[in-house]
Structure formats: C-alpha cells, structure tokens
Length: 368
Ligand SMILES: *Cc1c(COP(=O)(O)O)cnc(C)c1O
Image (cartoon, rainbow, N blue to C red):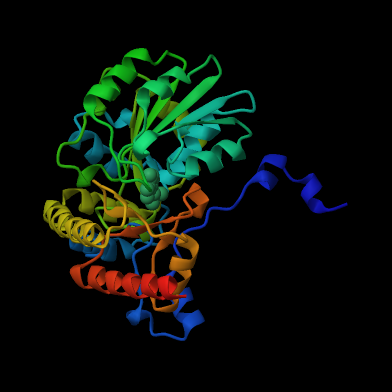
C-alpha cells in the first residue's frame, strides 16, 4: 500500500505553493554570480531591511540562547498602541501567512465555505483545500474584487471571507464605500479577513480598523515582509476582535514568532523614514513601468502596490527566457493568467535592466 493512502487526503490534494525562484538557486543553475541576478518576483523591498531593524536584530542575537517571549508582549503592546487598540486585539504570526493558516485551522472544517475573489492571493485556496473546506471563488471583473457579489455568495456555511486589499497579484484596491456596503451585509457567523500586506503603499487607504474597534468579526492582516523589508524574518500581525484573537492564540505554536524577528519588527514599525523612502522609490518605479508598458502597447493593470501585472503573451516562456538572462519575474499560470507576468518594483537600475531584458525576450519571441 502506498503511504499516501495513510495520509490526510486533503494534504494529498494540495498543490504546493510555488514561491519566487531564489537568487542562489538561479545563480547555481545558470553558473552566474548571484550579484548579477535581479529578483523582482516576490514583492520584496528593493531598499533592503529597515536599518533600525537591522541594528535591533544584531543586538537581539546576543540572547539567542533564550526562548523568545511566546506571547510577544513588547511587540504586541507597541502594535496595540500604534493602532489605538488593546494588546488582546493583536496576534503575531510567522509571516501573516501563518495567521491565514491559523484562521483556517480555527474556522474551517469540511462543511465550511471560504469565499475569495477569482484572482485573489493563492494561499487562501491552498488553505481551504488543506482543511477540506469548499472554496468559493467570486468573479472579479477588471481584476477588482466585487464585494457586492462576494456578499451575495455568503451562505449559512460561510465561515471566512478573504479580501486582499490591495490584492496580490492584481495590485487593485477596493474603496471605503464598497467596504462599508459589504460590511453592512455580513452576518454574525462570518469572519471577514482584510489582508492588508500592501496597505502602507496606499495614499488614500480605506479604514477597516474601525470595524475591529467596533467589535465586529473582522481580522486585519499586516506584514513586515513588504514595506519594512523583513521578508526573511517571517513576521506579520493580525488586528482582530478580542474573541477572534483569543481563538487564534489557542491555535498557534507556543513560540511561533522568533525573538530576532520580534526585535526587528518592533524597530521597523518605528522606522518612518524607511517606509517613506520605500514608498517614494516604489511610486517612481510604478510610473516608470506604466509609461514603458503604455509606450509598447502592452496591457497592464494599474497598480497601487509594489508590483505590476502585465500581459506579455506566453507568460511561462517569457519567465523562462528572462530567467536565462538573469532576471527573475513571476509567471501567472497558477493564477489562471497564462498570458500575464507579475513584476515587482525594484530600484531604478533593476527596473531598467528588467525592462531591457523583457524587450529583448519579447522581440526574440516575435521573431521566432
Ligand atoms: C506577501 C503577502 C502576504 C504576506 O506574507 P508574509 O511574508 O507571510 O507576511 C500576505 N498576503 C498577501 C496578499 C501577500 O501578497
């Protein structure tokens, strides 16, 4: 008997998440120096980690022999103060991805339904599959979440609704009015998750923390992986009602976030300068790409985040051929968008190199 038959069938059904291709791996395969490779595949911060976070993490290394504060008191307290909430509203995760998993652990079972948009962040679907729940995918015309349709999709079995705002990989956002209209319709038995991994890039961000403060069944996810430049540390946080936070606290491992990451996150949240510089360089990069795509007649989705979705035709091939030239982008076939690729905004030099290689690859494909 194959051992797979003894395994949980939901795990066997799972298609493993495919992350952006690592620089080291690409360098090894191509025989290149890692320094020559440009990775614009995982929406990382091109300016690197917050310098304040780096200093705090170096100093935290000295106490590496001590278990972390599993409750993350200092960091949770700072987050609570920052958002004018209580520490009991704050949950830490090993990346906000872990909080997505904790929510699914806590609220899903094989009778439950999870609602998300058709081109939403793929992790929601993976987690729904893992817990054997029904994944309800709502069309998102123009790549924008249709919250009215998502509200229509709620049934007595719905447990979780995920709204990625801005969404990855589309880079689109839904505004306050749509959100308020949606929230007015959400029944009590449903938890609404606003995944705000790119919130800090927005100029005019909708406020959903008001719903947490009102005690609604809402969980707002934020991360230190994107604007704070701490993706390697794996730390994110959730802001939610005390009841939801209490449930999630039970579902997590005792030391789910490590001490180095807690120290880094604490400092990064105070590093306004790094956040501002990142927003600035990102805004420039988005304008650069939008102008370039426009000039080339390439269809793209106007983005408010730190990446951009562009239609190049044969996304897998464009990905492979750019990779061969040392530029790592992301193909979108796993999002059922085989003609599109997603490019993260880099430094001006990285953006220029990426565009140059894209031009070359598209010209080669057109000529072949
Ligand atoms: C990047 C991302 C996350 C968070 O990732 P972590 O590194 O696990 O914090 C969550 N949601 C979306 C939509 C993302 O793009």
